[in-house]
Image 1 (cartoon, rainbow, N blue to C red):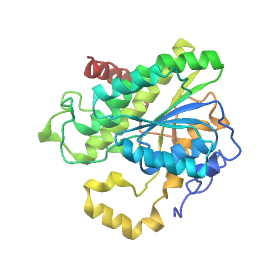
Image 2: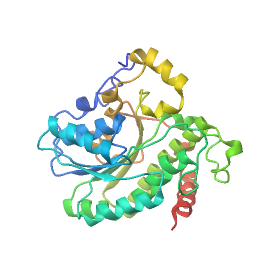
Image 3: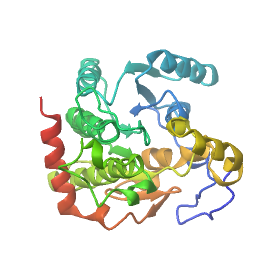
Length: 313
């Protein structure tokens, strides 16, 4: 239970849950993709969106776990529309396969929630020989978003309704090396698990901000925002047994519950207060200020170009 934090301008705060921030909202007719929806805040995000009538497509690495989550959601909300499609964000081939499969279904896409992530593992390279955190947390979502943008633009035009992209970042973005190590992404000798995590989370914010700039320039009815979900005891800590033990001990007093952790994601994805808001960073379901580097538009463009090169076939 989170014991700190007052309600902000939105009327919500750190102790608000995903159900609190979506109370009374009708998501019928909307379709959302939630990555990493088989555990943690991804599962809660999928559950709450489905509860409000949103057709949820879960992009998950473990489809068996995903189907279990789907069954649980259907037990609670029998008329929910939930689909499970395999998606491994650390594999560019898997991302392309997922996007192709999704587009072949002919479904609209109103909301894309880039939630999946890995936190501070030992140095590891992805299947594409890219440092795992940068590959999973940023590049996989970067490619996925690009491959789905035409579908989102088409949906917003045909439905005459704003589409929303939500990047789940972290306050950890403030601890990113000295920015982004463009020339040392895969350098094991300079690797720090925590700084590399921060680097990938900084990339999430820069990605959303550059998307927002492009949407405004193109005059399309899409928004892109990023957020910090809060400190939550989830499986992200599995690489650090000591931290996991500390969390078990003090977590009930100082960390958010999973329903509280999913609140800001659901708020940014669904709430009418966020209509037309783009290029912002949210904490506790309220606008917040990220680091100065996260707001650097030239740096965001540099990351965009670098990322395009990294994901090129």
